[in-house]
Length: 137
Image (cartoon, rainbow, N blue to C red):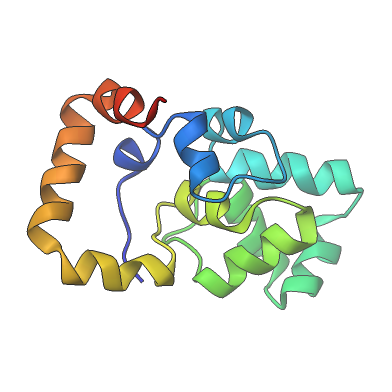
């Protein structure tokens, strides 16, 4: 799984994020938060303790605490992120992007078009409004 800096991924507009699969939680709210803050708030909204949710995910509650506080040494694996999303009713792809990862289904596209993807990410980083304007009807 590829990992991207959040500065690149968080430049998506809410419309672009919805095009990537935003269905369940408010996309704008998701993009304004960190991965940890979002999962902590969603866990509390669901009424789960850290131990309860960690048990559902088959991870140690101390690891979940690190994730919630944005202090984990590495981004969680995609399957952990997807499980978090399912248990907390958060869009899976949004949460994967917010964690700084790229969903596996997009990896092949990236590998098949490395020069184009590099140019796309560079352009998005240099001028975030370019992509927003490009996707407007």
